Length: 564
Image (cartoon, rainbow, N blue to C red; front, side):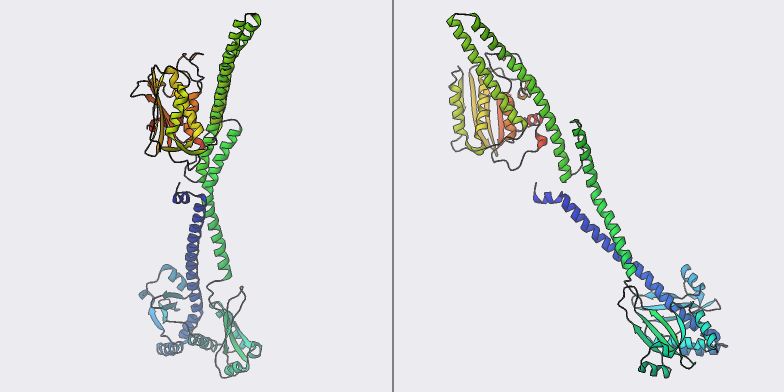
């Protein structure tokens, strides 16, 4: 598997990448939410601040007795405010239902425009048919001072101290900050501020704060017509874009959304692990037929595939063990019975020639038992797990010639033809096991050949191959896969004379599997009998063979793709 593919299907990359995407999405959502909330907050702040000031202007207009006086008063108010106040019919302005609701509740409506930057402020006059409006480009100190003058003008209609204080209490309902009438000496003003106050100037005090619990604010001190008394407007809170409660809310919301995103990332993995856990529980109860169905290509999906292969492998090992036990008991019974018979014959005869013949029979049966035990141990070693392969460069010509000499040394009346490759042709393999493969195939061919067998080898298209063929009766096509099953016999022809235990070809098949290759059997095109071919990669194995491939059936299915 390539690095890109590994990273693509890595759980950790998916989790980290997903977490990064979740965090980015939550950050964007939090930013959008904070902008939306602040937009509403600042709109509410503007309208609350404008309501009190415009209420004072509307009250000033109402105090004028004639239209001319109202016009003059509005002109003076516009000059003082720095922007022109106008009175327009309500029906000329396209108000929304929420705007009309605010106007009818005695609140100001502010329409803010970003480009160019300005705000139109509207306030419903007492007649209910017209609104007071002004366009403000920016809020400045002149407007603050004008609001103080409007307040003094309103208070001038109330003569006594108690009336003025009652009026301020009523006005507080329209303002978003306190209004009070206090003694000048209680305001902690410096000498310069006291002097300005005596000159009937409005004093503006800025109060900064480092506390996260309160915002910066301003206090507006307005000299009154009552000696040693001043009107205190404030503290007027300045707008705070990032108040503590909003930040805490955003953090909590972000943490909640990130938690949901993380859960959405982890839940599929948790579900897959739960499926594997169910499978493990079933296997612990002895149910080896369980299969964990996990879809995907990540580590957990591969783990589930390995788990399924493991259960298949364990099941196959158990079945193979049972099969081996049954077969071994059957195969051992015959030579043991012959040995017992020969021993009895030794005890019952005094003839030296007869006794020597029985001893020879016993030696042959003991040799047969040794061969059977060797075959069983070899098959069990190859079947139970991955054997240790001593991979090396094997000269195929030398190996074929060695097997040819060893086969001829058996003295069988069979002609052996060795078709060897060039002397420089090599393949990476375990020489001991590869020799065992060719030797087993040659020995099998000797038992069934009429007169000739051919042993050949070579390398083609990155695959090495060895082939053994004979001129016997061959193997029917429907029985060709059965010859690799342990202790299988296609007929009853295997007798003591023909030899064989049904393990040779099974061992060959397992060796081919551990070479990451395959075995197949077909018809010899030259001799007409059976031809056995083993192929495997010329280069050494670069990765472990997956446990789910450890089945004889999969090895058999690979025969068709391994032709030299």
